[in-house]
Length: 117
Image (cartoon, rainbow, N blue to C red; front, side, top):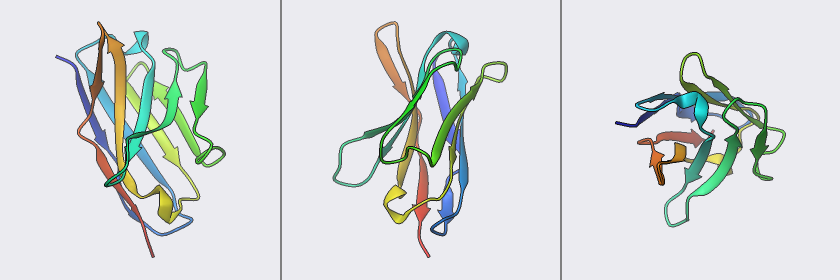
């Protein structure tokens, strides 16, 4: 079955950096676009970045453009999100997403990112 496992979250000071990872299994990773989303309490899940199946095309939300970079390693079935110059408003649970795969979108369990001094 499809599994997505995020890691790399934590507490960081404003201006700091974190690198999130998402280990994927149960599907042909290199055939599907992948995305990162984030969510804070009381708000809808927000698309942060998306990358095409081979990594040739990426798009990031305006709120993180120039600070966050999405990438992937298809040989290792892993998705990344490099987050630089973090701000308190980046605090959220970050989720990786795959799909739709056979009509369904899959989500990881999420990893908490807290930006605070």
